[in-house]
Length: 225
Ligand SMILES: [Zn+2]
Ligand SMILES: [Zn+2]
Image 1: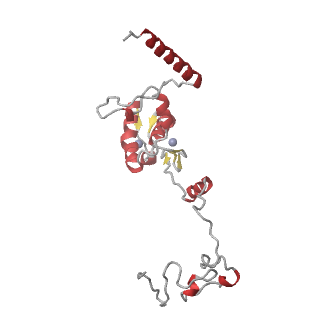
Image 2: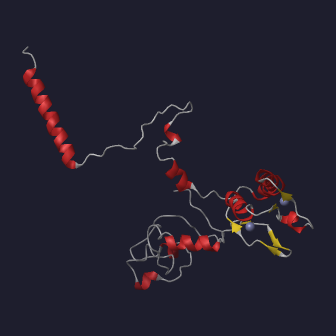
Image 3: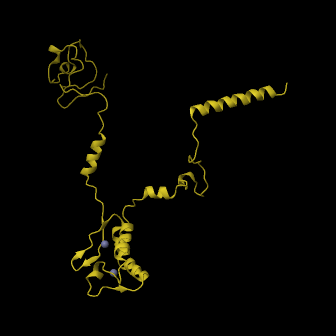
């Protein structure tokens, strides 16, 4: 053929069997390319195909990274989860040590742990550092203040955090069908597998037997032509 390529050194890198080749001869050597080893001397049978060195390669796909490797990769990535620290000042230099996982649990913590005192005083952040922290008579007012002055700005800053209640959503809404079964107008277009009866082999054979019997009777009772 005419599409022989020539390498920088001027030697041919043409593929295929060179002219004048005989079993036991190296293709590369015939073209003037250096070979890592002259296989033609002691390994005549392999010379034709083994002129790329002594490295042995496994054929086919290399074994994939296992589950352990994935776990190691995960740990190496040092996943960082923002913690939602409570900023309630328990005393002059002591902050509440609670670290919550998201905004919702932080809110619950604040109202449950700090929002039940008598009288109701806000010690969150700067409120807690004031000489006379704001005091509230009505719980509603206390909550309104904590919400507006502290928790809402906190949420702007930190976001809502991870929502870790997927399984509870499912448990609470057992009878609610998943939204992907409905079209955009809310009409169910795909039947649900919920409460679907499964047929075992015995039941399947019994059903077929009944069906055969019905067909037989239908044939028997069919009017003569
Ligand atoms: Zn706290
Ligand atoms: Zn406050």
